[in-house]
Length: 66
Image 1: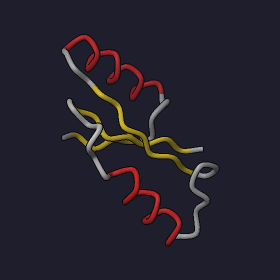
Image 2: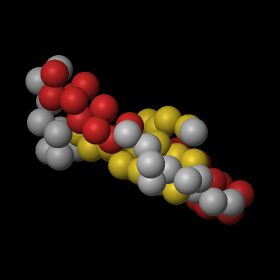
Image 3: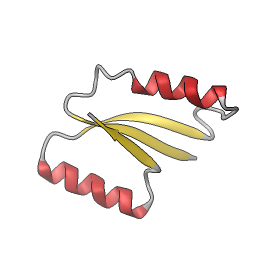
């Protein structure tokens, strides 16, 4: 499964997960099995550095920043 997310603070209001789900299913992907999109609140520099390390390891396939 490919994992994507939106990062920032705050991101609880973001509609990106719903938009990404629609975009994915329109392209024939099964949301929740083939692909998922989450909100990921990053409040400080340490959390951002940890997230960048996760990106480097391939845990995330990509992200949007707000």
